[in-house]
Image (cartoon, rainbow, N blue to C red; front, side):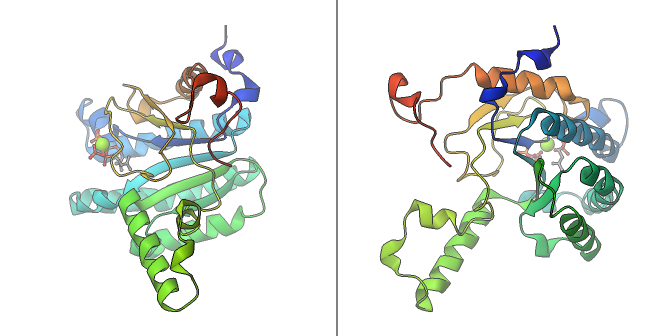
Length: 252
Ligand code: IPE
Ligand code: IPE
Ligand code: MG
């Protein structure tokens, strides 16, 4: 039976986030340069976006480049940035045809100008679309995001626009990059690593984590289906007891 048929449509995660890992290992195990793995990861992105859109997932966040990834060798960073420009350029029309709305989170000011411009034009081009919301995390890290939020809160308190007494977790959320996006219900990390690597630290508080040994360039629609099926078999309790939790969803 087709794996897709096993997915319960009424219990789809609203938001799936993916740490796309293992490109380098995929390439070096084939005797190639790491960048070859990144290039081949683009097809996995294409398939995952298509599968999520077809299923009716509302939000898909892809971790494409972390704050810490700036510390990689210059040649790899340059190659990744070049690839980013080309991929956005090549895929924008296709995303648009599929009614995908693109957005980005992260310290976008740190990106090279050509990446920033290409990204912004794709975001503008797809802004009216009403299907899948595709969020690219670029130059992003959870600690950077929370630190930036705190800085903005302090500025607003200092300037008198915010009463410090009103600060609570709901207020803090409105200062995050993701303030319009529900927290991920499912996080997938490929390549067998079992860590968060500074991704969405705030938002992952009650997310179901799914780790697969599949390396990102090998990730296909069926791998997404498997992760969703696994997610649908879990008991989400949000700190409560099972009977109560059935009636509760933790956010939005
Ligand atoms: C993920 O693959 C892509 C980025 C982090 C940009 P890696 O480049 O981390 O591949 P591995 O983990 O070294 O195999
Ligand atoms: C996490 O992968 C970041 C992205 C996938 C963009 P890394 O490969 O950078 O993470 P570590 O170094 O293995 O923790
Ligand atoms: Mg890695």
